Structures are given as structure tokens and as C-alpha cells.
Image 1 (cartoon, rainbow, N blue to C red):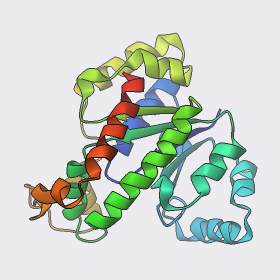
Image 2 (cartoon, one colour):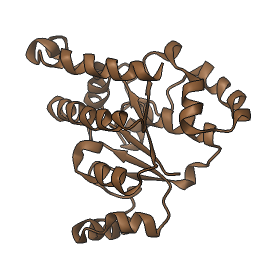
Image 3 (tube, rainbow, N blue to C red):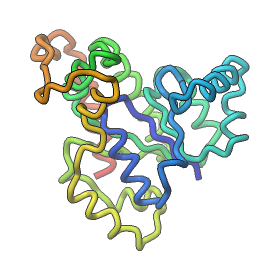
Length: 230
């Protein structure tokens, strides 16, 4: 069984990956990551090969030939790769993380090196939702809401992943702690940025929904989708 993680950067993806690893008892080394620009594990040589395969239309063949079973696809709506993967691996299961759009914007705003603009975040937020709804109609999606741990349904996720029954206790301690696996300051240090401690808030964040009133409907659809997993 192939497991794909379709997530937006800074949305809590590392949390759901760690949780899934616990429930399936797999190590991190077995996971490959495809960045929004489709670099493979952020390694230049591997990425060059993968980019060549994309240009030849053979990226799915490459993934199959290398028997990649666990793949993180950042920003699934960045291209059609996620749709092609879902077709090429019809029995695959997909995991994602939902996080407040405000928190995602704040996190990116505090990453001066590579953080996304508000416009890019909103575009991905809308387009990713279309893909999640597409998967959900096929009963191939499980979403974890990072902001509401008290609503998390462990048994539903175990059933979805078809995890061994005896693995439940192993995950309970992790769930009870519910901590940030990949905090902002770690990303700032990784990018050699100054770590200030307190987060800067974008000056126009408070008017986000006034400027983009359609966002209320998108948030409603995310919430309706998430209700399937609680």
C-alpha cells in the first residue's frame, strides 16, 4: 500500500507524518519528499534526475521503478502530479493536515528566506481543497486538524490505515502530548535566519476576510470535509 502526504508547507505536515509512521511502524528513511518545485528530498542530483523524468513524462514510472511507498507531496495543487499519482496507485491512501489559514500565513510571514506571500498561500489553500474533495469522494483521504486535538479520532485513523490493533497504545502518548513537530524557530535556524522568539504578525492580517470575502466559504468547505474524520 502506498501512502501519500498531500500538504501545504507550514500546515502541520510533519506532525501527521510522525503520527502515521507510529501507526504503521515505519522509519523516516523510507519517506521521500517532493517540494512545491518538485525537488526530490531537496537533493540536487536526485532532483535533477526527477526533473528529467518529469520533462519526459516518466515521473510515475520512476516512482514505481524505485518502489517509493511513502511520499510527501508538498502543495499538491502546484501541478497535476498528485492527480496522476492517485490514478497510478488506485489503492493508495492520502493523509493531510488542516491548520488555520491565519496561522499558516503568520508562519510564512516569519520565514524571510523562503516564506510564501499571502496571495500564493491563498491560491494553494483553494486549489488544494479541490484535490482533497476529489480524494474524499473516493474515500481515500484522512485529514488531521492540527488546531483541534480534542476532536481527533484515533480509531478512525487506525481503521483508515488498517494499522495493527496493538499499535494503538504506541500512538496514544504522542497524541496526548500533541506538540509541534517542526516549529517555526527550527525552520528559521535551518534557513540561517534570526530567531526572535515572538512571531511578527502581518499588518493586514486582521482584514484578510474583508479583502477576500470568498474565503469564508472555502473555510466552511474545509470544515465540512474535516467532519468526516472526527
